[in-house]
Length: 113
Image (tube, rainbow, N blue to C red; front, side, top):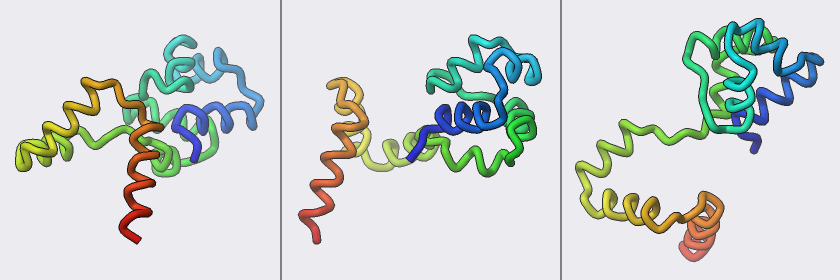
């Protein structure tokens, strides 16, 4: 599945709009938009709405590509289950990559079948 930034870039390129031009239309810097496309930053709801309009889609469609973790939900789970909080902390502290974690989960899921 594409990332949010990849989807933005694909839609922008399909409309033959440069990063600088889309940034100008959104009233943001080209550096900010580049960071969005590279997954380093995420636009506000207002910028997302404008971006969707410029790219000929809807904010809801763009949000389908938003893979950011639901921070409040993770906080609630960690508060209610200290073992989960410890597990999440280990993932961060040990620098486990998303790829490694997904690979582990895929292998673990196959064992259950």
